[in-house]
Length: 141
Image (cartoon, helix red, strand yellow):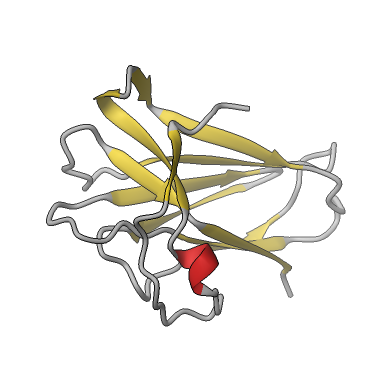
């Protein structure tokens, strides 16, 4: 519902996460830029909606992002909202093993969960780059 700036292929090719991604996934990511202009745009946040979910099931969502070859903090914040909400963070700069997860988020009455991706509070990149490379959705216990 709110776009990313673009996609790049500068993520880690070898990762060690429980998402178990092939390099075709881990190297690619969508990105935005919360703080400043990049390629003629400022994308403060990116938002997408998961729909068709069972309203009485609580879901766990895990996120991965990576941007290699950088020396700054590119913390990415993932806000997950349905009937309740949860937030998680991933330090995406040179990330090979960190995954941020939220647990027990129930969809709203329409069976939807909204995910907002943006720069985290510790992100010190000049334009506030943030990244999403992979996401796992699972029914919680």
